[in-house]
Image (cartoon, rainbow, N blue to C red):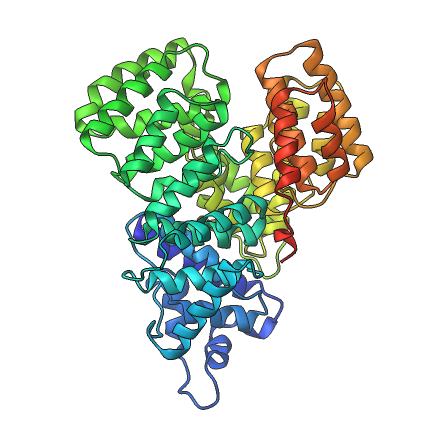
Length: 523
């Protein structure tokens, strides 16, 4: 994502929320500009609103906060998404803040939050945003003893992997700030590595992609080791996700890059690599191939792989015109359900849908989904996408990946796909790939299955695994266990943990979920 597109996306976020918000008067840019400033301030020129919303100028935090207030949105809801967009641009830019960071008030707020976090006081996502924003404004901040940084990073990471929606995104951005702070970085890297390395932890994928933000030697070494000799498929998946961004941002040194080239070359021609990992392997290779020193190597490997393994399977990679057609169709349907529409397709929205469903970078897809979730398009787009997925299952006519579609609906924060997931996982007639996609869409999905529904799902998938005890079936049961945990059925988790016929990985995961049960999502 370029700086230009980051500004455009933030402007679109503001415009769509104003244009389709509940206050009809504020849908007029002139009226909005008049309301923007208080009684004792000079009025805002309507042209300033236009510059913000068409991406000519990136607004600062106070501007976005004022949009939240006027539009009746939750505090930090737009700011957090805007910060994720800026970070995804990868150029080191941050949202500006008009206030000086060294005032007495800000110092007192910093000390109060540090005291709260180190004494196990309650911390909301907004509190984490404030704390890490204050530390970012103080790059020379030192804590004594220094291990306090590790205590802070450990707690934040534990809460992050237990959170969902905006609470998750706020903690994700907070952890990213710790990973670039000069004093906090080594401790934050160590916390991510420790969690990913814990064999009893379910949170393997979550901490690994966070390491993409830094070129820290320890972080690079761990990512490369998990690609070369992964602890398991989930560790490989997380490391590949980190590598995609690290290569794109030039985080690897020359020797590290050569090591990655060797590992990716091997994976491209390894027939045992699971199909759901192949697009990630290919994307790392494609990014390496864009570097002149590696171009010849990967041109040869990708040509062979595309013929022998069908690695260009992802229409997400090979059919940009088809992706555009599908995205335009979904956007048109979503737009038709909102008031005061024109016949013109929202081109920014269409680009976001392409990134959500067809982009081979899962972290960019995640940011696109969070953007859509923070707008009035959330529900109408989700409805259109669910129909697309059902068409794919019924007639094979859908052109987006089932896994991408179900994952998008979960990340967008809706629950309308829960009945479909239930039918896939509890009923007959679905292959392992379809069940895998449905199972991994359940953790942190909005809504909730009853304990009875989960028991039906568990029984069906345990029977399937016992009949064909392959790795994908074990992974499906892991995902189901994770979903049971995020739905809060602790009694059922205990049953999974103690059931001798359940795969060891699912039992271990159930134990971890019971140990780390957290009220984060209620904050």
